[in-house]
Figure (cartoon, rainbow, N blue to C red):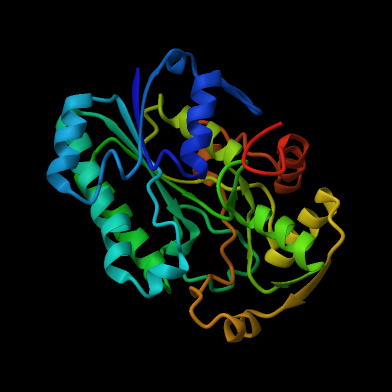
Length: 304
């Protein structure tokens, strides 16, 4: 089997390559059909997915069975000030991949986000795949349009929404909290935005299970359980052993301190209902996955 991974240098792209190379993850083995898979891993230097003809030509030459789109505009807050760049990566890029995949009959797994939802309080009930989107930011709006293009132009598609992602590789909230805690000894973190911390190991494992299935559609894949960013930060500091004080603040207070920041959903807890009803939901409770992260993280940009 041949798999094309776009955005291969990011958190998820790097994790997927590791799982395919080792033929396993912390959650178990990769599917039998993915053993000895041919992996074509590209980032923007090798393939600019915003260029339609280049994307169609590349996919036609490589002829993968499955395309996993992890390509991302690395600065989410920058989407609010650089709309064109965000639109190209998050809307036009997925459209181009969807058209290219359809031409050769490939599956397309497109990674999306909780930001497609407005974040309005839902009576404490996590949002499942039947919940209607309603983004409140440029990032969320362009991601939603990308989803719609994938659905329109590629029949064999999986849209996988995730949230609060962290991994052993690249930049993420967990590493930011650890490094800031060491440097400053104190942290101020919002306590009125709730969601699901997600270990990239779990997300990668699920994506590779989907890669060999025919259960097409929209999926949520996030860590089990709901917490605030403040709760998440407190657990990070506890498990890291860093001596730092974590103080809660409101989103309004944070916005005053960081006016250029993206409007983040206040309630973005997702429910992995589609997984439970189809292939099964192996995703760990967020606390367990975070504890496992600290047991294996080398403290920098990889594993022990």
